[in-house]
Image (tube, rainbow, N blue to C red; front, side, top):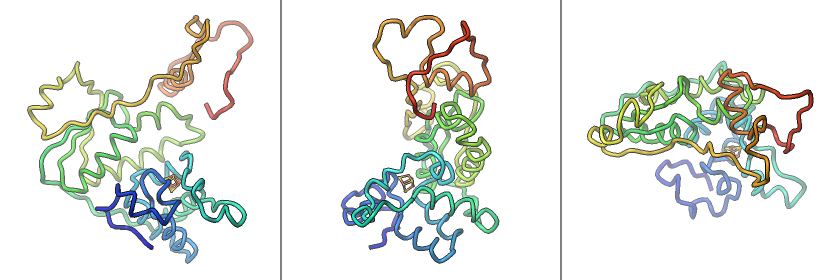
Length: 249
Ligand code: SF4
């Protein structure tokens, strides 16, 4: 079964027979894009992925690929490397991928607070449905956790910028350095918009709940990454550093 119809995007029953597509949070049409890649049709695969995901090049690098957890191929040997194939579709189509035409939505206005992956994905979907979307971002650049939470060696900033350009082509307006509550009030937004989406991010660090984690010189991963990616220097006390956690951060 091939499912591409946008209306069914969030109806899980539609994907019940396709575990990879069901496990993917944006229900990417994995079967079909892998099929297109097998035919050497990288640009078509890229366009198909972009139908439900405005961040294919980002996901190709940093998605935790739950789709592979659901892959039926595991019953035979191991999962298809779906995320890596997404990287092939996006990287190898750079020369011949034609971006969709620029669009100018005309329906009601919607404000989205936060230009991170959640806010921009919602903005992209709403703009393609015809709504006039304005995204308000407190930082000077888009991407939220993608830009300020992930090191650039894992996710080059030009990859984020290219994806955001595509989102803007769908008709999304992004206003930077705009903090809701300081530069504009929620009431002002309510007066001017049909709906408001709060997508301000998940910046609260996972606390260990151990004595001393609030001492000077102890940094939590998200705070540390935010400061590094914002260009701040981090004062280091002493000559030894202990890192708790062996993840990417
Ligand atoms: S890599 Fe991520 S975005 Fe891509 S199909 Fe798998 S779960 Fe979906």
